[in-house]
Image (tube, rainbow, N blue to C red; front, side, top):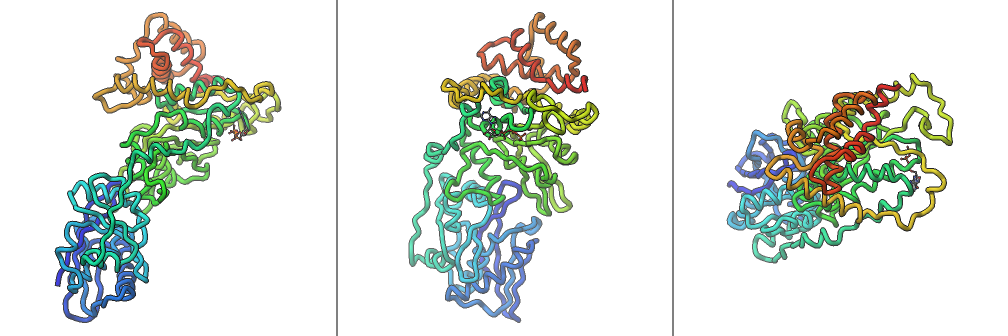
Length: 511
Ligand SMILES: Nc1ncnc2c1ncn2[C@@H]1O[C@H](COP(=O)(O)OP(=O)(O)OP(=O)(O)O)[C@@H](O)[C@H]1O
């Protein structure tokens, strides 16, 4: 006897449909799973056996063959437990074939028959909806997440026997619905605000420009000057996430199993701050079947690397691909997966190994050679992908008084959003979204400067010893500064301000 049950599995952040075929034939009792199952899928037979028996059904003492089709893709995870169990119950005649068809099933089984949550239920629900299924049966703990998808009935279940009763028509299950709008409205803005950062007007202005143009930033300053504090507040001035962005980021969190079950949609831009001991696999993703790393978990949000020179050289080098391509491809012998990784990089470092080179209140103990060696840990190509360099000096005592007139994140965000709207119009019908992503040809057409601004820029390059690669960076930042002002043309004062944000190019020439 043969039964077919539909399920789904994830590749990267997208799901594909899997047909679970169960054949029961007379013979010595065996249980074989074919179709490239990984260890967790092979082990499912033990869980399925106990779950069926402990739910009050008879487990057949026959030869059972389970085939997971398509057979050429590796299957991993525990989500096939429920469909395999239903297939066995279908093949033994407990469940009529008609009852099973039209639904997609996923769920891990515990030995007593409870249905436990699995990773990736959001992409699987999207796959079910696209394929036109009438419903998806998911573990109750995944119900919130799957019900974010509109146009699909999501049936949350707690036990195997509840699923069987539902399919046999002995009980009904109310489809779960989530009003996606409320997820955006009830969003907690985390309680942090730019107005809490005292002084540091120059750094705040730089971060506003960075947020407006999607530029990467490197902050340089002594310990305790507020670099971490500033970085943590960046997401409060970025534009709110769109629904599409929220879905993309949520899919990544879903496949890694990091989704908060009560907040099924990531509606707040992620902020990821991996420690400097992170491995290259931890940062960009890896593993036997590649999993997304920190750069993908920061997708549509902020990746904060504190103490940048402390990260291992190979870790900093692998950052170059996601920074350039906004996605990372991880290749393994068996498979090659691509994960999105469009994030804003906010890096921070001390100006020297002891940290106090620019702090008037502390004497710096470092030699010129030590400082040079420390700074040169950040390679030219990486530095090249960071548009803004910002000096964050120690805050003078007089500035450490709460300022009742300090601008709030909401006020700054208004300006950021206005500048983003200008960019949306500018880059309509192109594949780029912000000034930071402009390639040379875009810079040529959108960052034209008049003769006055051109001569200011040229003399800055000569007198400050700026590298040639700084030229395009300065033009991009000038474009964003002009957008923040609502100016159609880049003017001299935009260029003059932008030049200040390439301080490390200068430093390289003055070790
Ligand atoms: N400008 C500031 N306004 C208000 N508080 C500040 C400011 N700068 C520093 N602080 C206080 O000092 C603490 C330490 O700051 P923070 O960790 O941001 O410094 P940092 O520059 O990142 O230091 P480190 O280099 O050691 O990481 C903050 O939690 C905050 O309480």
